[in-house]
Image 1 (cartoon, helix red, strand yellow):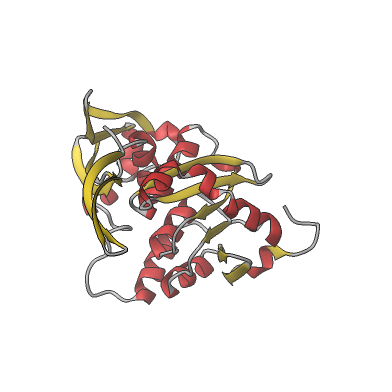
Image 2 (tube, rainbow, N blue to C red):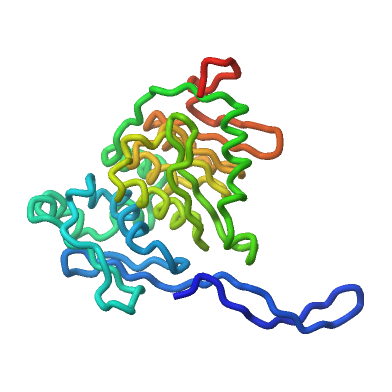
Length: 270
């Protein structure tokens, strides 16, 4: 299944009317089934489905380790809109209650407030270790490299991107999607499926930072999450509660909303 499709459009520019073609990003549903039962449906850009499901299920608390997976694939060979994850018997027993609740973390119920979200998330999410000092100029260089990993955006101007780096600022994985949360799931999922999540250090994104993105980064053990737009207040509150550094990098400005103790302008950071 393709991630881009051409569509005809009418352009009005400079007093003239023209018929043109434009590449548009594709958006399709992905049904996620866990151990034979429907768990969630997400709207996403086709591609990297196994990584997407792995990253999504990690963020949901369904997976902790690649060894929790027996099989991860599709119901039918040519049908990539339905993905099936089979857990080990041990893991299925450990997350039985979570599977019954279906999307407890990512699909919060109506009528709850931000403080309750942070409280509930704290019970589910690990505290992020504080092991790394980040140099501002190096982090800025990392986020400025993001456009080199955005071929879909280059053609459509409508895709979000996420990139994961290790402590040496080496890119470990990147992904694009119509949804920013999907892009992060896919990037994290790639690292997770390779068994290298313990080496992942921080992520940069081409979007604003919502609390769901903080949730996903925390489940992956990332110390820092950086976007090109400012975070929501709830995202900053959640990041602070799990000891994560949350920042916005745009043009020549680097704004840190929590976790400033990891940031340095000296030569002793990564």
